[in-house]
Amino acid sequence: MVKTFRVKNWGDFLDKLFYDTHDDRIDRFRSPYIYRGLNLASDPLTTSLHRLGGDTPTLEKHLLRNFRKYAHTSEISGGNTWNWLALAQHHGLPTRLLDWSYSPLIAAHFALTELESFSEDGVIWALNYVNLNRHLPEKLKIAIEKERSNTFTVDMLKEVCKDLEELNKTGTDPFVLFLEPPSIDERILNQYALFSLMSNSKIQLEDWLHNDKEYYFKIIIPKELKWEFRDKLDQANITERVLKPGLDGLSQWLKRHYSSKP
Image (cartoon, rainbow, N blue to C red; front, top):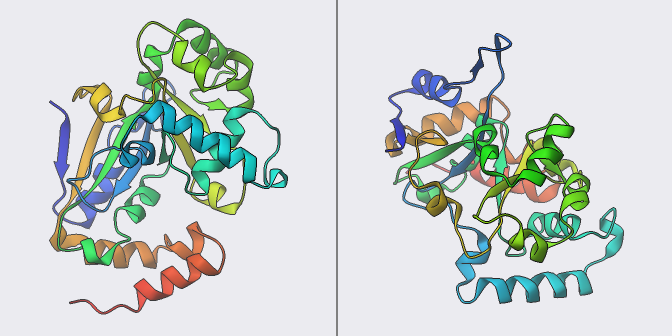
């Protein structure tokens, strides 16, 4: 059964955010986890592509083809599938990608952005991406081991797998890989972002994990602590103003910051 922490206070929250981050091999605190915050603890790890419903493989092809057709290519460096997929996800196109952050505090921010959800518990997922690389097919393992990395860049992935169709056919069993997006803008950089990518668009990550405690744990943010945690993150400058540079992020931060507590 998956390990789940229901935190009791701010100190307990910080402790659980950095749970199991010590690397005994080097005697340093270097986390093998990546983090994703959701405003509602009841929400599953569902991709935007799955939320559309219907035939996901067919929808994915149509969406990405038309995005490439109409998008301004000046926004992207290189024309390979993985660059386009990262750009599409970044701009809100439904894809099979899920957003994560290396930072547990940034994940905490995204679990505390919707004031209308403060009457219900939130959650942060912590996924051991280092351990999950054991399930990669051999040619993908070789590629990241060669670079001494635990994640792929778009260029690294392009060298071993040219597109989604080839990825679907790689290996005999489904797997997940972790993709660092190109530095499209400050938002990507400031959010310390990366993506998870299932080899088969029909399979959802949460179902594939099978409640295996070796690969992830969850931190439940009780509804009664949400306002306190939100205010303390604001004081620590973990806000939309920083994580979404520009007038949109600034406006979102100001709107939330000056909202009254019910």
